[in-house]
Image (cartoon, rainbow, N blue to C red):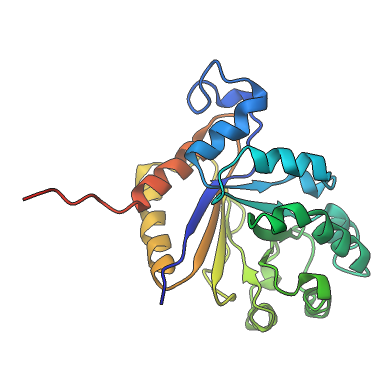
Length: 248
């Protein structure tokens, strides 16, 4: 079995406050993504939560990153927060269709559906969404923020569609480490105060084992005014690189 890949980054990249610890002082905003992609290999785009990107925007983003870089996208709030997975076929289809340039370029990572904290488990709605034709073959991940979703029934619905339970952690809630998709998994790491060297080393051990088992792993650290997130993601990728053997 071939080993999987680890894709690590943050939720966004357009943060001038990351200077100078992450972005060098002289790098202009239009070059942020270029620099980001020279150090990290994935990003979670939250822009799509509010508005779908144009083809021109996507082509600009694609031109700024190397061929092995992956973009993950958050599903629109219309789907997750307003319609709450009900009668949202057209909105989901528009979301998936808008990302076609990224898909064609081979740089599409996850489609993340983040549900609001007051959305209690409704397995019928979840199953109906996952059965939409436009989602077949996509890497779909669900972040549940209500404890009622953490059940064997939820895991079975996700597994039946090869969708991932997003293993998210924050000060308010931690998701059980259940892997429901066959070939990939996803993490969102949101603890206040960021992640120091010991935490990153622990993450590296966990993700290395998952990748060794053949899974692609997507992990996104919290975006904050301070650059703790991108620096943690960079440290994680460095920890996962094979160690060079010294010559005898």
